[in-house]
Image 1 (cartoon, protein in one colour):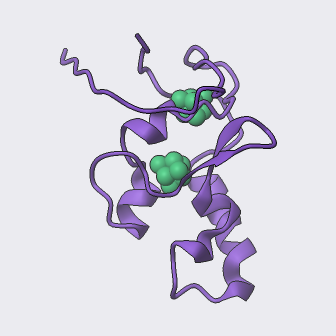
Image 2 (cartoon, rainbow, N blue to C red; image 1 turned 90 degrees about the vertical axis):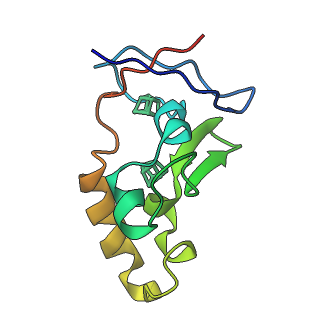
Image 3 (cartoon, rainbow, N blue to C red; image 1 turned 135 degrees about the vertical axis):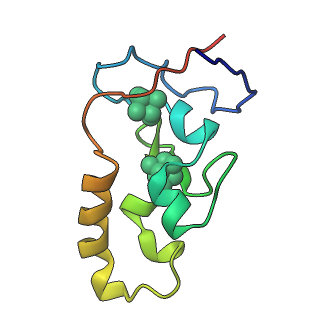
Length: 106
Ligand code: SF4
Ligand code: SF4
């Protein structure tokens, strides 16, 4: 088994990370630690904090920019395709389901 540690920065009002299997609360830990396959494939980002991670001040949680406004990151994506693409992203990242990050915060 391998373990690793890294320093990540989160908003001071970000919710605490839930346990694996609990509902995702937008804590942002997973996306601040490393890009997911969507970021890897569409944003060509291999390491570091995902460039599409967005802090939502009104809801006090992190959200996926590829889900809420993908054309901001994909200049080739026609605006009229934005909602279709967002629906695909929602399925790819399994948004709104249980937390699947085993990261622990110290
Ligand atoms: S999947 Fe887990 S770590 Fe990622 S934002 Fe949701 S609750 Fe946080
Ligand atoms: S694309 Fe969205 S779900 Fe994937 S790492 Fe970036 S912010 Fe997180």
